[in-house]
Image (cartoon, rainbow, N blue to C red; front, side, top):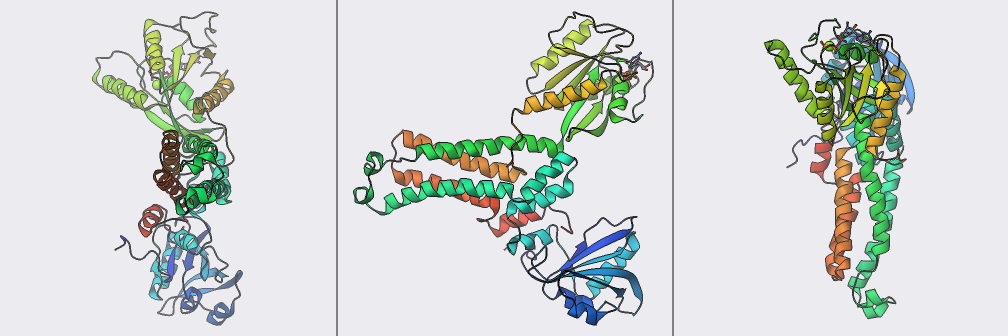
Length: 467
Ligand SMILES: Nc1nc2c(ncn2[C@@H]2O[C@H](COP(=O)(O)OP(=O)(O)OP(=O)(O)O)[C@@H](O)[C@H]2O)c(=O)[nH]1
Ligand SMILES: [Mg+2]
């Protein structure tokens, strides 16, 4: 029994495609067998709706069963298979605000539409061959994209760039597998011209290595994509009064954090998202690091430390006016030792005390003034360069967009690694063939060529309603 048995039918469904709230318009999407005919019952111009050709827009009113006008709308009519879902569909634009949309939805329910499940429109598009799974996932990525880079990568996948790469890799692999299957089906000496094959051994190491390299490049692309989708946590740290909150506000271009000359001003940490060169950065301002016996500040310092544990990038601020202290060198040493973190050291208050030619740390220091803004542009580009260098992968044309895709690429790669290991040991083809089949299946699962109802339901149920 499937978990949610409504996925997979073709009954008429409806859902808000826009978030109800104040705005000029609300879009309600309807799809399914007989959707336009059903909507005739609540439309002021049923004849027009009945005879409307696909890809046309008609004007009218939604009329409640009691005869009252609900809203004045435009209905875009799409006829199967030329629609997003591949079914007969209707996009109703009604007035914005929550009341008009709710009224139209209620009328649609009254005439027989049921509420769409999360991702059900895209599910139907997939089932009707309109999109493969990588494109379906790209739709969701696009809806969630926070920056222009995230959007453009999702658009690439929506246009089928990833699907094509996966299919090309799969084709290469199927060629290797079919060579093996033939040898398994016929006796070697009947067909083989190759010494390995004649001895019943695998001879496809070279193509398998090439395929593996392509899969590894794809798997690496996920690290970059994850950062474009989720962003990275960058924590501003330093001793009290170093200027952390001033820098936070400056990067945010907003007076969000309280700045005073009193050391220990920031107690609880504050987080906000900025975008640098298309990378979403979750920037956190923290309480100044020092031994404190004052209870509130003490908790603040503990929280700073907790956040620093999770940080992917630490912006460590030295108070230039006070000069570098033993505490600074100790903290910097600690962050340098944490190998999973990127670290940038900033010399602040350069307007009062310029960065000395020699200081007691090994790292390069970026000179800034959080008061005047000097050095901030350089800091922003250093943040981007540091993240890019930390990623250690080029911005590839075909890249993975979801953890699901990454897990399947890794599963295919693992099967091929095992293939090579067995081949190295001179193991027989009947042990190698299942591994190659497993890799082919994993690749097929990425695009949805190989799929089960459970996997699909699990995937689409994470989408938003109306998509
Ligand atoms: N001249 C000068 N003053 C600065 C600079 N950056 C910060 N200040 C001043 O230093 C003082 C402390 O600044 P904050 O931004 O509150 O420092 P903080 O590191 O957040 O301090 P805590 O929250 O107490 O840990 C304020 O008076 C700021 O105006 C700078 O670049 N130049
Ligand atoms: Mg502060």
